[in-house]
Amino acid sequence: MHAANKVTQCADDWIDIGALDEIPRQGARVVRRASGDIAVFRTLTDEVFALRDRCPHKGGPLSQGMVHGRNVSCPLHDWKIDIDTGIAVAPDEGCTARYPVRVEGGRVYLSLTPEERGSNGSS
Ligand code: FES
Image 1 (cartoon, rainbow, N blue to C red):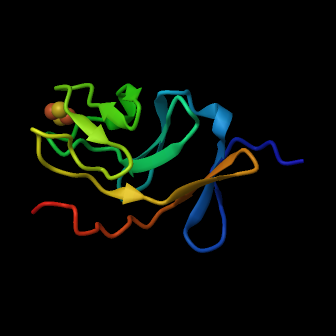
Image 2 (cartoon, rainbow, N blue to C red):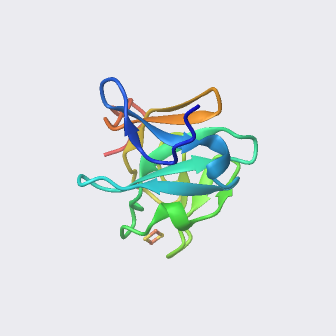
């Protein structure tokens, strides 16, 4: 049985960050990396999403915000960020990096390679 609560390295750049139940619903946990912290969010319906833990406004810690549906409210100035896309909800503008994440057997796996943004990001 593996009940370790540590981050363990898996194949490629996917890491096991722990059990889904260790992430509070409508909250997040932070995965600290030298390249920048990553916030892994859990929605009320147990979906998980991962974003760089930096608000596109002034770098606020999105992991400390409240998740409503698929948006997180930044704790600093209350911008809403879509946790599925990393894009700020209008009228605000900006985006933060998104990371692939998946749940298997009740455990959460995170890729450390940010996803390329599609054509819906504005520049
Ligand atoms: S830093 Fe997030 S809303 Fe200002």
